[in-house]
Length: 210
Image 1 (cartoon, rainbow, N blue to C red):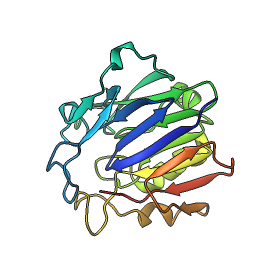
Image 2: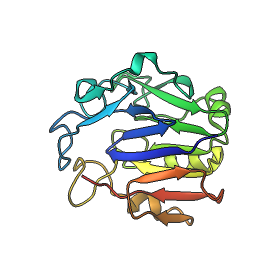
Image 3: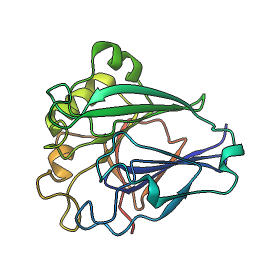
Image 4: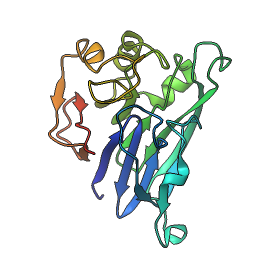
């Protein structure tokens, strides 16, 4: 099995790559998130958890030549959820996606705003990597996110959708509001995580690179 690269492009935008096949998730529009530079990248497939401006700018991702003829190395499972605690009445729906290459299962939680159902939890339980928003306000708050992570037990958790001094919405929380709840933190020098990892459970903090 080939290696899988997971690259954090900022906010909730993730680049998944395996065997020269690239998927970009939740691209943000220019100016939609304070502090982030314009997003310009290429992919064979673009997927969005929902179509708010900070997650659904599919037009900013260039589809690579020959993409339509390439086979996706992942089986993709979609889980319909909500962006809020009111059944979508406040912010609409949210699609969680699980990417399975036969060796690793990677879950992108989008802007998860409520606890998954028990059936949905069973689908997510024990994924190898969970990419999850930790800033709260527009999503579940950090303590509830941590409770969900503790229950589902992903091997690697990658925080996203938070604020720093230089980027992110003023209303959402900082990374440390979540990491102070964790005791397995690994800080990476760059914005890419490469699987296979060593298998040890960790909260993988990736560094944004413009």
